[in-house]
Each structure stands twice: as C-alpha cells, then as structure tokens.
Image (tube, protein in one colour):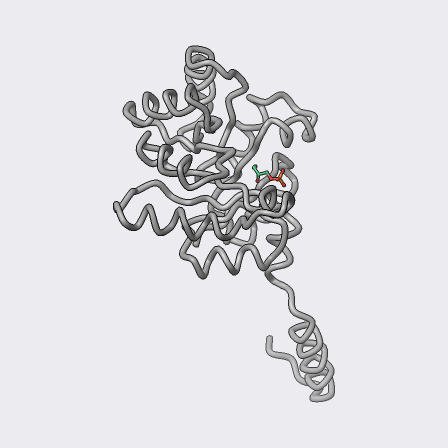
Length: 217
Ligand code: G3P
C-alpha cells in the first residue's frame, strides 16, 4: 500500500519524507489556501521534495478551463498528477488528459458508479472520500470494498486512493481491502508509528542497558 500525505505544508512534507515511507502527496484548493502560498510555487516546491505523484487540483469547472489549467500545472514538474472533480466535464478532461499520457486523479468520489466512470475515463487514481461519508452516517469503507470489487472484476488499472482519512483504523481497513493508496493527514501518518507498549518496552530496554555500563560504538 502506498502512503501519500494530504497537505500543502512543505515543512510537514519534508519531515515525513525523511522517513523514506512517503510515496506521494495530495493537495486540494482548501489545503493550498491554508498554506498561504502561491499555488504554482507550492506545487513546484513539493515536487522537488517528493519524487512520487503530487496531485494538483484544477479550479475551473468547465472542460476548456480545466484543460487550460491542466496544461499550466503539468508543466511544473514531471511528477504532477492533475486532479479533477468527478463531474461530467471533469471526466471528459480526465479522458482527454489520460489519452495524452497525463496522470489524472479524479476526486470527490462518493459512489461506486462514479468510481466506475473514473476508471472508464482512464484515471490513474480515483479518490473516494471515506471520512466525509462517515460524517453523514454512510459507510465510507463499504464504498472502498465496492470499488475494489468492481475494479478487480474488470482488471481496471485505476488505483483506489482512499481520501478524507480521519484515523489509523481507516488506513488498516483500507489496507485489508487491498486499496492501492491512502492519503493521510500528517497526524494520522505519524500515529501509524505509535503504540504505548513500544514506548514502554523501549524505556525498559534502555534502563536495563544503562545498568550494563556498556556502549556499542
Ligand atoms: O484531499 C481530499 C481529502 O483527503 C479531503 O479530506 O478531511 O477535507 O474530508 P477532508
């Protein structure tokens, strides 16, 4: 399973990339606004930190506008993935860009039917939002299971990028379903490393080691 981080905070991205476990980055207009930086500049900065796919989302809602923005965004770096919303125009842009060899992430996916369309449009990634479905009392992880089943039935190459992740259990459930990617808020990615028994066990080992008076180097 690949781990992407869902942020435009370059300090966070640098720190998480140093783990060697970060495979890519996703951004959206809300995260860009939060960064307070110019969109094109922040995407260029992120692409230099992380060699994997970096999603940059179009702001236009019509086909021509999306295509014009996509042409600007994909010039920033080779690892830019163009993110388009799951709308009629967004899927048309996805098909055109994908046919042209550009990686596309279709975002704001909330149903298996939408995910089927994204795969048929040649998306490299589809982003189902599990947390936002859970928030309204629907089964976010159930959607991942349905999409995985459909994609496996037809051997679609579109990768399921689990988005709107709220906690580590979302990550584990998605991994059990075989989802290809999870994009995680930085705190959720950090939380994956932690277990209180690891901390307790390490403290005990270190205390016992100190008693030996030895050093390894
Ligand atoms: O980037 C898309 C998605 O991960 C947004 O998550 O937390 O705003 O629902 P959230």
